[in-house]
Image (cartoon, rainbow, N blue to C red; front, side, top):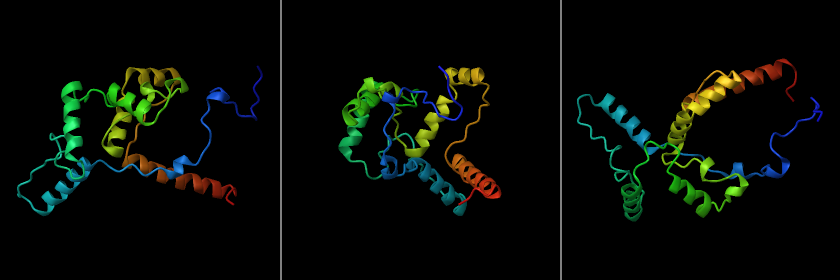
Length: 183
Protein backbone atom coordinates (compact mmCIF):
# COMPACT_ATOMS: atom_id res chain seq x y z
CA UNK A 1 0.00 0.00 0.00
CA UNK A 2 1.38 3.40 -0.99
CA UNK A 3 0.84 6.26 1.46
CA UNK A 4 1.08 9.85 0.31
CA UNK A 5 2.84 12.49 2.42
CA UNK A 6 0.11 14.96 1.48
CA UNK A 7 -2.86 12.97 2.78
CA UNK A 8 -3.28 12.05 6.44
CA UNK A 9 -3.90 8.41 7.24
CA UNK A 10 -5.69 7.28 10.37
CA UNK A 11 -3.89 4.76 12.57
CA UNK A 12 -7.29 3.49 13.71
CA UNK A 13 -9.76 1.93 11.30
CA UNK A 14 -12.39 4.52 10.27
CA UNK A 15 -15.27 2.45 11.65
CA UNK A 16 -13.67 2.73 15.12
CA UNK A 17 -13.21 6.51 15.09
CA UNK A 18 -15.26 8.54 17.55
CA UNK A 19 -17.58 10.93 15.69
CA UNK A 20 -16.73 14.62 16.00
CA UNK A 21 -19.14 16.50 18.22
CA UNK A 22 -19.24 19.57 20.43
CA UNK A 23 -19.59 17.58 23.67
CA UNK A 24 -16.20 18.74 24.98
CA UNK A 25 -17.39 22.37 24.89
CA UNK A 26 -20.26 21.39 27.16
CA UNK A 27 -18.15 19.72 29.83
CA UNK A 28 -17.68 21.37 33.21
CA UNK A 29 -14.21 22.20 34.48
CA UNK A 30 -12.73 19.61 36.84
CA UNK A 31 -12.46 21.27 40.25
CA UNK A 32 -9.32 21.00 42.34
CA UNK A 33 -9.36 18.54 45.20
CA UNK A 34 -10.75 20.01 48.42
CA UNK A 35 -7.93 18.36 50.33
CA UNK A 36 -5.38 20.55 48.55
CA UNK A 37 -7.52 23.65 49.06
CA UNK A 38 -7.71 22.89 52.79
CA UNK A 39 -3.94 22.40 52.96
CA UNK A 40 -3.35 25.71 51.14
CA UNK A 41 -5.69 27.50 53.53
CA UNK A 42 -3.97 25.95 56.53
CA UNK A 43 -0.60 27.11 55.22
CA UNK A 44 -1.84 30.70 54.85
CA UNK A 45 -3.40 30.55 58.33
CA UNK A 46 -0.15 29.22 59.84
CA UNK A 47 1.85 32.00 58.15
CA UNK A 48 -0.52 34.70 59.46
CA UNK A 49 -0.79 33.12 62.92
CA UNK A 50 2.64 31.75 63.92
CA UNK A 51 2.45 29.29 66.79
CA UNK A 52 -1.35 28.90 66.57
CA UNK A 53 -2.83 25.41 66.99
CA UNK A 54 -3.80 23.77 63.72
CA UNK A 55 -6.15 20.82 63.37
CA UNK A 56 -5.77 19.32 59.91
CA UNK A 57 -8.80 17.13 59.22
CA UNK A 58 -8.13 16.87 55.50
CA UNK A 59 -6.69 13.37 55.75
CA UNK A 60 -7.74 10.14 57.33
CA UNK A 61 -11.45 10.71 57.78
CA UNK A 62 -12.65 9.58 54.36
CA UNK A 63 -13.93 13.07 53.59
CA UNK A 64 -16.33 13.14 56.55
CA UNK A 65 -15.04 16.58 57.58
CA UNK A 66 -15.79 18.05 54.18
CA UNK A 67 -19.20 19.63 53.57
CA UNK A 68 -21.57 18.45 50.90
CA UNK A 69 -21.47 14.64 51.02
CA UNK A 70 -24.70 13.21 52.43
CA UNK A 71 -24.28 10.83 55.38
CA UNK A 72 -25.76 7.87 53.45
CA UNK A 73 -23.14 8.23 50.71
CA UNK A 74 -20.30 8.44 53.24
CA UNK A 75 -21.61 5.34 55.02
CA UNK A 76 -21.86 3.42 51.73
CA UNK A 77 -18.34 4.57 50.74
CA UNK A 78 -17.05 3.33 54.08
CA UNK A 79 -18.85 0.00 53.60
CA UNK A 80 -17.26 -0.40 50.15
CA UNK A 81 -13.82 0.33 51.60
CA UNK A 82 -14.34 -2.33 54.28
CA UNK A 83 -15.53 -4.85 51.68
CA UNK A 84 -13.02 -4.09 48.92
CA UNK A 85 -10.15 -2.16 50.52
CA UNK A 86 -9.05 1.40 49.88
CA UNK A 87 -7.22 0.70 46.60
CA UNK A 88 -4.52 3.23 47.42
CA UNK A 89 -2.25 0.95 45.41
CA UNK A 90 -4.54 1.41 42.38
CA UNK A 91 -4.42 5.11 41.40
CA UNK A 92 -6.72 4.46 38.43
CA UNK A 93 -9.62 3.30 40.67
CA UNK A 94 -10.81 -0.13 41.70
CA UNK A 95 -11.93 -2.58 39.03
CA UNK A 96 -15.44 -2.74 40.54
CA UNK A 97 -15.74 1.07 40.50
CA UNK A 98 -14.54 1.38 36.91
CA UNK A 99 -16.84 -1.43 35.76
CA UNK A 100 -19.77 0.27 37.47
CA UNK A 101 -19.01 3.68 35.92
CA UNK A 102 -18.39 2.33 32.42
CA UNK A 103 -21.13 -0.26 32.12
CA UNK A 104 -23.86 0.97 34.46
CA UNK A 105 -23.51 4.78 34.48
CA UNK A 106 -22.14 5.61 31.02
CA UNK A 107 -23.70 2.49 29.43
CA UNK A 108 -20.60 1.81 27.32
CA UNK A 109 -20.01 -1.54 25.70
CA UNK A 110 -16.50 -2.96 26.11
CA UNK A 111 -16.67 -4.17 22.50
CA UNK A 112 -16.47 -0.49 21.46
CA UNK A 113 -13.00 -0.24 22.97
CA UNK A 114 -14.28 1.77 25.93
CA UNK A 115 -14.27 -0.65 28.84
CA UNK A 116 -13.24 -0.78 32.48
CA UNK A 117 -9.67 -1.63 31.50
CA UNK A 118 -9.09 1.71 29.75
CA UNK A 119 -11.04 4.14 31.91
CA UNK A 120 -9.59 6.08 34.82
CA UNK A 121 -11.82 6.34 37.86
CA UNK A 122 -10.72 8.48 40.77
CA UNK A 123 -12.01 11.00 43.30
CA UNK A 124 -10.27 14.27 44.05
CA UNK A 125 -10.73 16.35 40.92
CA UNK A 126 -7.79 17.53 38.87
CA UNK A 127 -5.25 16.68 41.57
CA UNK A 128 -6.29 13.03 41.58
CA UNK A 129 -6.10 12.86 37.80
CA UNK A 130 -2.60 14.38 37.85
CA UNK A 131 -1.57 11.79 40.46
CA UNK A 132 -2.97 8.96 38.34
CA UNK A 133 -1.23 10.13 35.16
CA UNK A 134 2.03 10.60 37.09
CA UNK A 135 1.69 7.02 38.37
CA UNK A 136 1.17 5.81 34.78
CA UNK A 137 4.42 7.50 33.70
CA UNK A 138 6.28 5.48 36.32
CA UNK A 139 5.12 2.06 35.10
CA UNK A 140 7.49 -0.42 33.45
CA UNK A 141 5.27 -0.41 30.33
CA UNK A 142 5.62 3.38 29.91
CA UNK A 143 9.37 3.26 30.55
CA UNK A 144 9.67 0.51 27.92
CA UNK A 145 7.70 2.66 25.45
CA UNK A 146 10.04 5.61 26.11
CA UNK A 147 13.06 3.41 25.47
CA UNK A 148 11.65 1.87 22.27
CA UNK A 149 10.65 5.23 20.80
CA UNK A 150 13.65 7.21 21.98
CA UNK A 151 11.38 9.67 23.78
CA UNK A 152 12.68 11.70 26.70
CA UNK A 153 10.67 11.32 29.91
CA UNK A 154 9.12 14.65 30.84
CA UNK A 155 6.13 15.04 33.12
CA UNK A 156 4.31 18.23 34.00
CA UNK A 157 1.08 18.13 35.94
CA UNK A 158 -1.51 20.55 37.25
CA UNK A 159 -0.39 24.17 37.49
CA UNK A 160 3.05 23.39 35.99
CA UNK A 161 1.40 21.99 32.86
CA UNK A 162 -1.04 24.92 32.67
CA UNK A 163 1.86 27.42 32.87
CA UNK A 164 3.77 25.47 30.19
CA UNK A 165 0.76 25.53 27.84
CA UNK A 166 0.29 29.27 28.34
CA UNK A 167 3.96 30.00 27.60
CA UNK A 168 4.09 27.61 24.65
CA UNK A 169 0.93 29.14 23.18
CA UNK A 170 2.56 32.61 23.37
CA UNK A 171 5.75 31.27 21.78
CA UNK A 172 3.89 29.61 18.90
CA UNK A 173 1.68 32.68 18.39
CA UNK A 174 4.83 34.83 18.04
CA UNK A 175 6.27 32.42 15.44
CA UNK A 176 3.02 32.40 13.45
CA UNK A 177 2.91 36.20 13.52
CA UNK A 178 6.58 36.54 12.52
CA UNK A 179 5.94 34.29 9.52
CA UNK A 180 2.99 36.46 8.49
CA UNK A 181 0.54 33.60 8.91
CA UNK A 182 -1.70 35.35 11.43
CA UNK A 183 -5.06 36.35 9.96
